[in-house]
Picture 1 (spheres, rainbow, N blue to C red):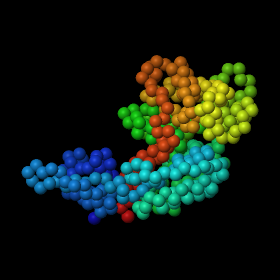
Picture 2 (tube, helix red, strand yellow):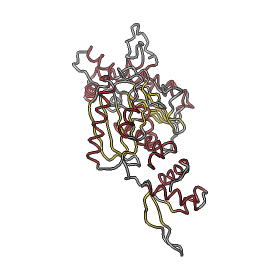
Picture 3 (cartoon, rainbow, N blue to C red):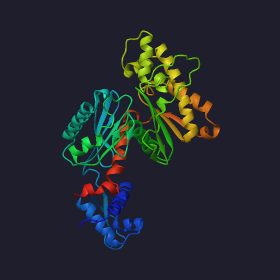
Picture 4 (cartoon, rainbow, N blue to C red):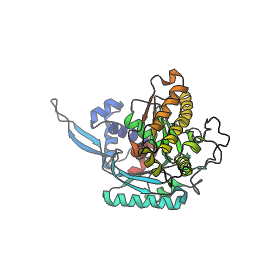
Length: 389
């Protein structure tokens, strides 16, 4: 017996995802549905192991009422937060909790076949270690603009060979389950908002790593814009007085915020100061050591980034600005520069209760956001039928 209406099943399952356990009577009270309808939907969800019996309520004079709970261990969610130079893959239960994770270095410019092959290998290792459960869904983030509905990267400035590549199809065919593809900073913003700021519906997360980007949560949902390009704060013009020869940016323009404040730009500047280095991790190490040229460049980067963030604050009016990424995790220089410019440039109405903080999730923000977004997708009406086969 199955419920012919996926929307009805999704709505009942959503209640169990929000509550530790419920009785039939409680489901009826919360939904207004008739007992027969509730029984039918509970039967279907129990039959397909999306719900599990969870004991009984205390008797109030009659037979004890049976309780049911979301069966969080009846499958796995696989997620991978892929950056320009590294990835973090995780095996999560159906409640989006991370059970196992793996990290690896990666060169995003090596192309989709190479990088996604590495992602698949990490997934295989996680599944081998985690034990046999069905894979209910897959989510992957990438450091470039994504056409979300299609699951494709569109004209990414640093992802050579990825333009238009069908990432969703690559994994949906292999695992036979729903696959979500999104921009890396979008999912970081969602992870931060849902985990650390659940009472704040409007949040801006700025990532300062190899590149510069931002993710926007508006009304509790990711704001992607018309074509997935919202939040590309790294490629707005930087305001640097007296610079007659602005540096070239990887996007093809000159003088972008990222061309001054991105990790790759700091590598360039520090090499010009005589430092032998080639990675953002090495820049971060110099910042932690308090190396004067690195600290000075980070302070300048923070102010330039702060100018762009101040504009975003004036337009979006978020309740919180979160700064994340390798450069944000080093010292206070970058964060101090952002705060200075935002409070200086934005109007008091936008800043009087504004929070500007470093990410509380750190390197796990992307994986957390992916797992939360994936669970919402998998258990929504359009996909729940795939779980009932």
